[in-house]
Length: 210
Figure (cartoon, rainbow, N blue to C red):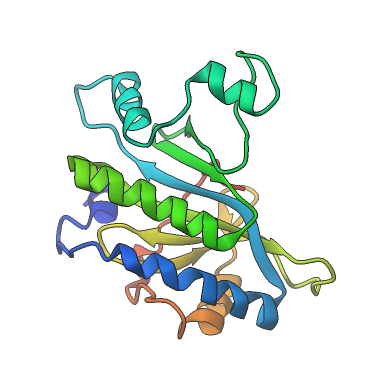
């Protein structure tokens, strides 16, 4: 079974519980008080274009569903030109990683707003029939000012088809900090529905979320 099959949960279909995302702000408070870790203000929704359909056409449809600005509107909102990369707060932008996965990216320093927008993206695309293409949502976390040297950046990953979370702490050279991941689970395991099958804690190398 491949990574895509696992992420999509094809061997064990589970109805997506998108409301589980709203437990994240509470978990973020726990992470800050117990581990000195705060939201990076960055999140992303990862999806895989279906075979045989140009990604550009699909992205246009997604943009219309989520009312994404075109290049001119986005760059003007960010105070740039049409050739600039849109980075305005609260707006979805689209990207692709080196493995061919597509991403809807959002920047917002407020964890509640960030979660609400990610939930909007997932639910809108799912209701429009895009559920089979949705893989996961990723939230970046980083050390707060004055945090201990042991605090390191990591991701909290929400598996769309499983309705569960897991931590992913990448290191240089496509390695991961398993010790940190298990510490994160111990800190917020009571706040979030955690994925109990560790074989599903998939690495997301090259995720464009910071």
